[in-house]
Amino acid sequence: MIRAVPLAVALSMVLGGCAPMLPYLGGEPIAAGATATPPPPASPRERLVTAIEENGCLLTADNAANIQLRANLSREELASIIQDLRTDHQVEAAAPGTIRLLSQNCI
Image (cartoon, rainbow, N blue to C red; front, side):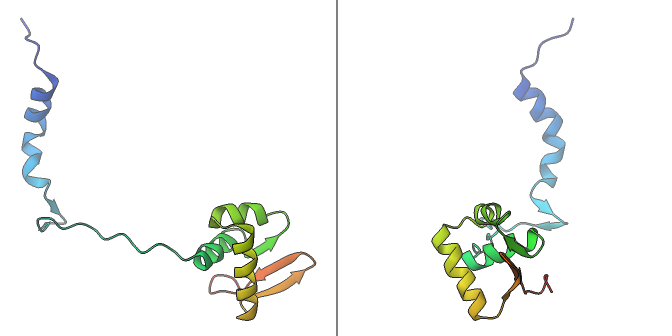
């Protein structure tokens, strides 16, 4: 006759052999209380540049709403950052109603 074993007991028995390996990553023990530090949040300008790069390096009337949403910017922030990029010669007019980003990823 088969006895029913509670799920928690069964899992602890199955995973018990793996327990000694869990504190190790790449063969090195993890220091007690050590946590990974998340990267600092991107600035609004960095978010905008990334969003434009991901949209083919062009900001147009057709993709402006998508870029604004992707960069998480208000219309005022978007306009201000575009002006800053223009002042820093990091954008140029590519065609009527189109702004081309000039960055390491967009030439």
